[in-house]
Amino acid sequence: MPSGRSRRTSSVGSEFVLIRLLQAQAARPDRQVFKGIGDDTAILKTSSDQWTLITTDLLAEGVHFDPATSSYDDIGYRAAIANLSDIAAMGGTPRFMLVAIAIPPTCSTEQIQRLYRGMMQAADPYRVCLVGGDTSASKSGLFLSITLTGTVQPRRTLLRSGARVGDRLYVTGTLGDSRAGLDLLTATARAGPAKLRPAYTRFLLARHHRPSARIAEGQWLVKHGLSGAAIDLSDGLTGDLRHLCEESGVGAEVLAGSLPISPACRAYALAHGRDSQQIGLQGGEDYELLFTVPRRKQEQFERLAANTDFCFTCIGSITPKRLGLRLRTATGTTQPLPATSYEHFLRPS
Image (cartoon, rainbow, N blue to C red):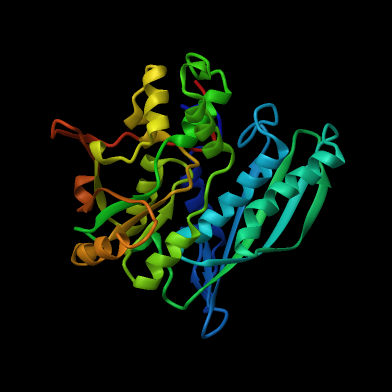
């Protein structure tokens, strides 16, 4: 996870403005491309019975991970989960993985082997095959890029662009755990982890080092045709909800009191003088799914979900675009939802 919040813009400017510029410059129409830039994965119409999903993530030492606070096994595991979570957000099945790596002189062969071991520990439960990649030297830290392919039934994928006014907003799991776990590893915490129960400390560290990709939940949503739109929470709820709303052309209202916060995260917040709801809003790399359910399907969704082991929580609703993104507090007042999630190309002030 990128460490700390960034406030001063670099010479590159906004990450997402840059993506739009590159999309306009480089995108080319092709009949096989069902969805290109702008979603969790690209979607290619490769056959009549299965479409192909493709996603890639680049991780850089000092930006996304720090070997001083994470083992190489954990770095590899989290790198694979970042890609698996993209496939989960589309409701797909992960298939094949390619890994490109640039290795600095400070890394040993054993450390790189541990990195790959972590990647495969994340990928093996889904029978993902490592089929290739590239290796290079690096003069300035470790760089790791994973490309993952997957499959989905034609026109059955989840997209960011499918949210409609009146839809209910849901998330899987709990929010903010990875952020709290990272804080326990770094100097951003106001006090050491000794204030927490050991079980809570272990839970939060595990949620940071070994997050889950919600593959089964995404596939379940696609199977039952219950979700209108979805995105995985990699940059944090406030940022990723913005991406979903921008693609769908809508606004949203989040109920602050409905955010699913784990007992461990609440205990961490209390021990360190933090607001657990703010951690849930801002924290990134929980890799939970944020998705919408049409209002007419909400009763059916709740009934079917009750018969699963999945953890789904309704946290708000989709509103007209003109209302923007709002946060409804416990007192019933509303305020603009702050843009507090991580964004690349911003430097600390």
